[in-house]
Image (cartoon, rainbow, N blue to C red):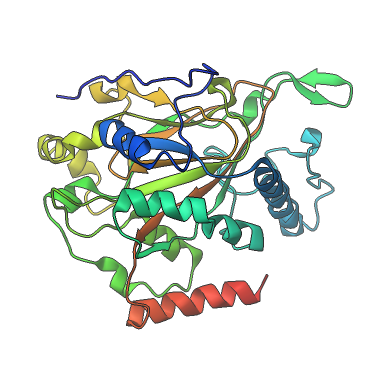
Length: 328
């Protein structure tokens, strides 16, 4: 049975969960082992500000997708950010359709503090970064537009808890490495890479993460998870294989039913700007919608154990990344 866990808070600001500095290695590893996630402050305020500007560069660059529209998105002018032209998956606050390959996005993936946290948690220096998207939750309540405050209920994202990967295949019916067949011709191949895992073993660990660029309080919307969920993943997968598992056979993105008892102990993981949140990939996680005047800016990030760059997959992956770099 799932054990409900009470999360420690930041002693200096109760808006946030407990977070760590990069040099507190043993402390944050112990926290991760206990709760299945951890937050470490890895970026400076200048880096956060630069990333927020880069997110707006990304958003404004999508205006060309609507050449006949009189509407154009203008950064920080929320009156221009209607659902009609907002890019990506609006109900999830994920920007799209393209992945984030800008120099700023890549600099965050190469950040020494970010790398060190993933290397420490995975227990090896031989790791590789994924490539993924930006996230932006638009503000929805008392939003300043000109000299007036407005509400935008239609901008609220959908609350959800899910798993990136198929726990029943991973634990009970492993298929081996299906990523060997990826061609990396489409951005969706990088997303499939994120969700595919090698066969389960008791001592294996696979993680996901996100970088948070603005102070993110509970009411600002954003990341949530069920602390400790991954500790019982084998027992849970066995117990649910004929119910939830039957509905998601061979799928790598699993939206969990709202009536699962384990999900009642989900916690919003609110953190200050500059924090990297890393969680065990088989932790039930997702997001809650925004109920405030403040936006949420983030970058999704993951590191995994290095693959052979000289292999067929490694060469195709490298060629695809190089092609993206040439287009910047």
